[in-house]
Image 1 (tube, rainbow, N blue to C red):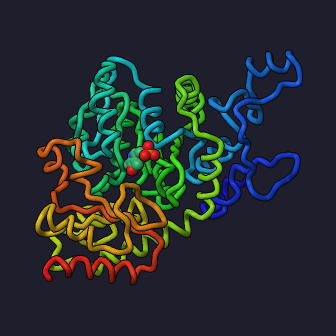
Image 2: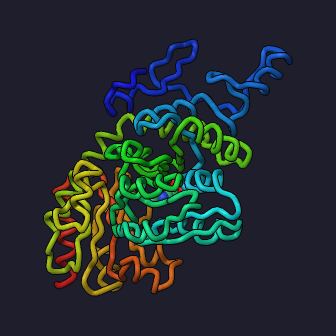
Image 3: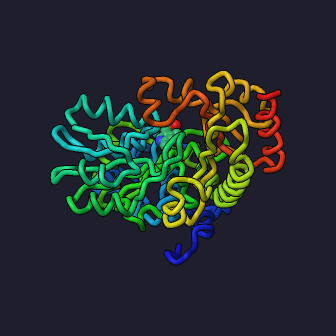
Amino acid sequence: MSDSWNKRTQAVHAGVRRSQYNEVSEAIFLTQGFVYENAEAAEARFIECGEDEFIYARYGNPTVSMFEQRIAALEGGEDAFATASGMAAVNGALTSMLKAGDHVVSAKALFGSCLYILENILARYGVEVTFVDGTDLTEWEAAIRPDTKAVFFESMSNPTLEVIDIEAVANLAHAVGATVIVDNVFSTPVFSRAIEQGADVVVYSATKHIDGQGRALGGVIIGTKEFIRGTVEPYLKHTGGALSPFNAWVMLKGIETMDLRVNAQAASAQKIAEVLEGHAELERTLYPGLATHAQNDLVQRQLGGKGGTVLSLDIKGGKEAAFAFLNALTIPVISNNLGDAKSIVTHPATTTHQRLSEDQRDELGITPGLIRFSVGLEDADDLLADVIQALDSLSA
Ligand SMILES: *Cc1c(COP(=O)(O)O)cnc(C)c1O
């Protein structure tokens, strides 16, 4: 494996670990355990487990290890630990490094379950969390204290697609020695350069673009070898958030086609957002790739101008119009995943963000008319025609 490879080469070859059969496609080692040659070998492995040695699949497994090494190479991280879901990764990254009395600063625009961990779970264990508007650097500056242990944010927020300046927040955090943990799902591993830009730890829900075909749950934490093996691994191997070898194989093969999928989906999302912007039935068209997006300068710097695969449409007429729009679509399916080959539409206020109070939703811009649209791999013109007929049906 070569460090000089570009992402598309890493995505296909990084982390390959061949068995004695020299198979071309990665093997699925669907085994929870590993046989020791003799009692002495078992003892030795429990004293020190080498890179190419395994003990138990909760600790590590060859297929899972291939996935970890491939995504770490792609992200430019030293190492990675794979988890059973994206939430196991977010929880593992935070709880493995925090203890009672620690202080965390977090952006407040978060995926519902991330918010639950930061707002409810960490508080129960005596971790103090200060929430800020992630796009406002003066709020980060005011909230980060000399004793701040970590900062946490989604680099692109769900579902309002605000973009947070990784480099600027990392500079503030690093000045006090705090660890920068970034949930990078919406930026995708294809467009991300988060580690180069200052993130210490990057977390993905592999359920999204890494699988990209709606099949399996998974997650991953990427960071330095010291953080992954010294902090994350001891926590996760004993608390049981391991990724199954079968799901690791699904993710490993997903990575091979991810660049092509995500680029095609992002190009369609850009086209759809550009055509829809200003449509008479829309209050707002939110897409980071639009020149009119509030942080488009940052999108140019941080993501090479790529706005990702999700756009959000604020339909005039509130919940009733939003539901009528959803029900009039014929191609996108109504569901709540994203990054899938199939276009998926979601009404956040009544589903993914239903648990929030109306005030919290207002503050985050999750209006009753807001629709999240995860653009899939269908033909962009077919999708556009479908969206436009559904919008036009609202005034018919
Ligand atoms: C989906 C998602 C998660 C959780 O991932 P799961 O695989 O569903 O557990 C966390 N953060 C963000 C930003 C997500 O979109």
